Amino acid sequence: MPTTSPKSQHVLVLNCGSSSLKFAIIDANDGHEIISGLAERLGADAPSIKYKYNGAKTVIELGANQAHAEAINTLVTLIKDHNLDEYLTAVGHRVVHGGEHFTKSVLIDDAVIEGITKASSLAPLHGHANLLGISSAQNSFTGLPQVAVFDTAFHQTMDEVAYLYALPYKLYTDYGVRRYGMHGTSHYYVAGQTAKLLNQPIEQSNFISAHLGNGCSVCAIKDGKSVDTSMGLTPLAGIVMGTRSGDIDPGLFNFLTTQLDYNAKQIDNLLNQESGLLGISELSNDCRTIEEAAVAGHKKAQLALDIFCYRLAKQIAAYMVPLQRLDALIFTGGIGENSDIIRANVIKQLGYLGLNCDEQANLNARFGTQGIISTSDKIPKAVVMPTNEEWVIALDAANIVKEL
Ligand code: AMP
Image (cartoon, rainbow, N blue to C red; front, side, top):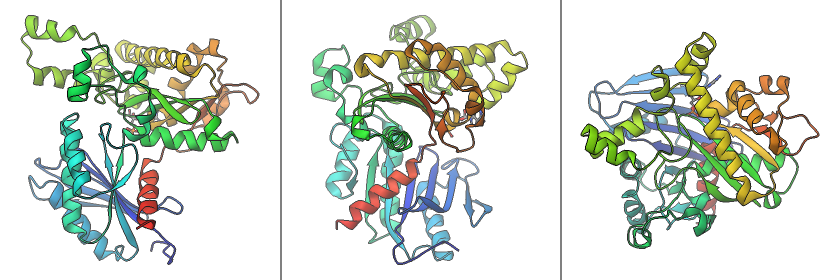
């Protein structure tokens, strides 16, 4: 049974992707996960919900083509069957794009829905799924406050010098075309935790945070605030990712359309689904598979790793321009938290910044452990810090509900 007390503040955290729904009930007081799971292949042939509760893993098969609304209905039944609704105080939604309008988490009302709908034109796939999740949750959890937590919000402190593209200015003023950045909740969380680990005030901390998961981004954090980040108008920009290209020459669009007859949808698919580690290795988007293959002598797997690390190191070095002084380089996300190979490679390329790597500490930092992986007396430090976006969402939701 969950550890509930009258002080517990259980928040249902929902993270809707285009065909998936990640969920968890979290006690905002301590980040404890009471139940967590993932609904996959929503709207497709064989959708299912996998969840973990009390140490046991269960799979529920959904009917063919069932999507977000049905998954949330099943989730409601599940929550009620386990009597988990008793202490539920809010629903917290991860919303990918908040545009310029949302600089912090907000209680969802009609005006907020309108704002999210507007920002959705900048990230249609994610935005549509987020809105679906919100409306389904509103229908299923009537009376429970719903809070939106934006992936873009942390980056709203960037200066226009960092966020404007060198495009006709009117594209920004009339259509909002600019760098927004994503993974903000994660960069914010790991920066705060690293300041605690290093025992220094976050307001005086200069960090570069590398969130390396299936999606990857780097963030320059000056005096605790985001001053630049590698993702842009959409999550496609920046460093190499699992299946996304990151930055490319925009002239590629012309080449693909005029020489190879690609249309916009095919280009979007090429850059988002077929590129990155997968595109180069022609093997997998999964870093573990690539590392194993590289060790076994797979040349393109090794090349994919080399390009991934080189581009990441270059991006980190570039952020010394806005920061000037670096206190710590932070690794997080599935790759950042687990791959000693990638961490060691990147740190080695950045040796001239004063970064170095303690071999044993680097090997030890995995499976959710946090720690300093550089030799102890050196600044900047290299730090591994497990992210916990769900807890930030739960905390923000709980804090907003307290004010009601
Ligand atoms: P995320 O999106 O944060 O769940 O991260 C997913 C990525 O983390 C995938 O590319 C995984 O292969 C990678 N990953 C997870 N564990 C390891 C590991 N032990 N070594 C290398 N990569 C890992």
